[in-house]
Amino acid sequence: DMGSTYGFNFRHFGATYKGCDASYVGQGFDQLKEIIRLIKTDPTSRRMIINLWDPQNNQGAALPACLCMYQFYVRDSTYLDLQIYIRSSDYFLANNWNTCTGALFVHLLCSLNGINLTPGTLTVCMGDAHVYSSHINQVNENIKRVPFPFPKLIVKSKKDNIEDFEFSDIRLIGYRS
Image 1 (tube, one colour):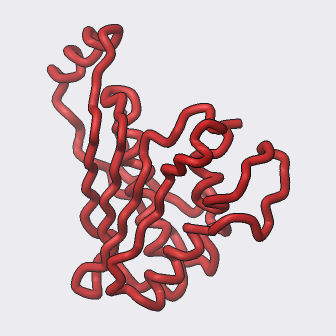
Image 2 (cartoon, rainbow, N blue to C red; image 1 turned 180 degrees about the vertical axis):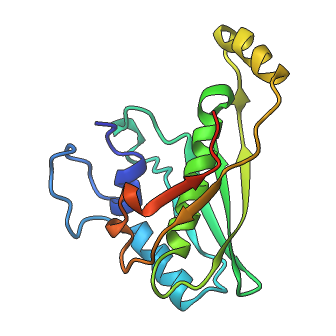
């Protein structure tokens, strides 16, 4: 139970958090639903933002959102670009996670019926990027490694609702760890 952060703020921004088992139907603002609506009906909007930073409720979070904002941009009526803002990035451990989930998010949005866009550019901005001293040896080892080529992410079919996607709908081609 992370409290009033991430998923809660995606779907119930501004509501009062009452525990992960509570029913929040109709409470708060559903930012995910709004982003999907804007991409479909007003793709030139400059207001396509999901804000996960809620100062009023941060005290109820196990950890206030490190990745605190997603900003979408439809480029050339063809591409869905995403900029994510990370207020505090444990660069070695969390940055790849945040980057990959941002990319997956864009691919899923582009695979919704009514959204005929191609995943575009992903930009990551960090306010405070840091490496902990206990990670230095592993960071130095990783710097010496030659990275493998990036894999290709395929979403197998279109869905009507983002909640309808399952793990089996996603294929990762050429992934090497």
